[in-house]
Image (cartoon, one colour):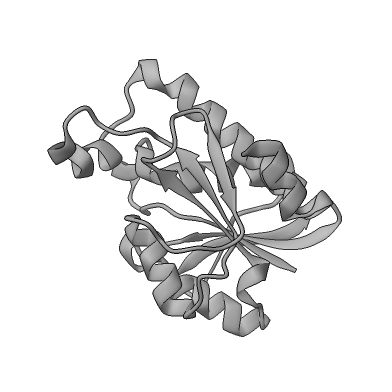
Length: 185
């Protein structure tokens, strides 16, 4: 079993922001694999089903980005999951829009959501998919950039990244993370 987590912020005002790329990927996975996201437990909205014959739980933590790990660790304990059976999907400014990067493990970089995940589960051995959002022109505008509304001219490129991340989840579960990394990175 895999816990597939999309990071984001729960309030309506954040729906259409770069910081909610993880939520967007989960929504697309739920749609493609007919998984109903209507259950609430452990500070998250979730649904379960199958992707590529693998049992999965899709999760959108409702704890806000900077405390995402609190929901994830509760699911891990309840379902007795190891970090390598958790796949976290989130936005990344160091990846250009329309692209994704898959990693087996590693540090959180500057992403506060991943900092929370690693802090709570006490491991960097968490597979992840980073969905590219690019960087703002001005360095001092990072917060406004990630939680600001997506401009119409950017939408298509960002959706390409969401689509690739959705397909990459299928590849990871079907052929393994190493082959998926070769295919998508």
